[in-house]
Length: 382
Image (tube, rainbow, N blue to C red; front, side, top):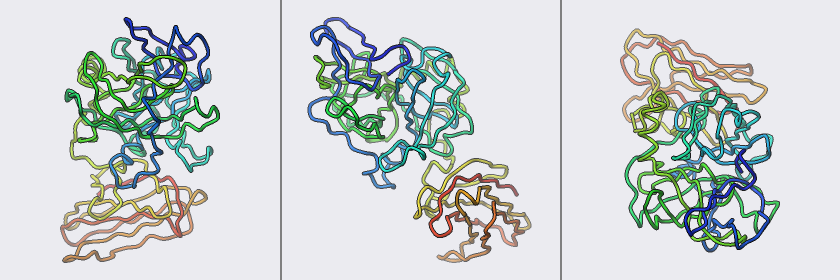
């Protein structure tokens, strides 16, 4: 639900259009307004059902549960290291971010105490016609949790899509938990908006709509068409990025500049699921960012290119009370990786300063001692 009202509805021409914000079953005259956005049978699934290596699971990390001071909620997603996007009908002005809470890990199996709240309290701007809003957040959460790539390709009827959103079928179960979910479907029409048959519901406003072929966001969900108070409807609608991105470039150019200009720029950050030597995130001297070991099986890998005589200065800063983290430095010899240094202690933080004798790539593996999990900060220089 948006801060502008409890289940806000727009009537467009002869068809009822429902802005999908809110989280309660509406009440009223079913012949005059609609609350239907689920198309047919509910087919969304928990994001946790997807393998950690799947692009859907990786993209889901950038999606957030946005809760407002008045009890309403929407969905949002990071488009850069520190900028969250959602609908304008969710955030209409700077006053709407007052008391707003943003949670990154509202997923099945995660206790409420570990939803990972980030602070997003600086209103950047919005646009009513394109129904999008931008908010700046503290601490570069896009680096820690991930950020999406925006795509301006025009949608075509029949395209496969998926939506990642914070919702549940509260029409069937009023007390359900709006865990992060994925709904897959197809584009069923393209006009001013893009229309599709994937399921959403009030509270899904601001969800990213991904092109299933490219795994990039080509639209932002904002409404649904239907009839009656059954929670079921005809189709859903999103504003295409082909319209939003040019508007952002003209009015908020720094946002896309920070995100690599909405394209793959070859940069590597922990948001890439850098959990193998082959997918190690490349570090440059002076890099400093936050990351996290989220499970007992997770390991983060980093790669640094060194020249003979340079000093490899790598540090992870963390609280031992939260979880004990260690790291190992390797160099590749032939087809295998040889241990160069291990950093293991029972105190906060770990650091290595190593002068290298040969020019080559070195790899660092960060992991939790005996399955420990913790947030940490990477610092690298040479």
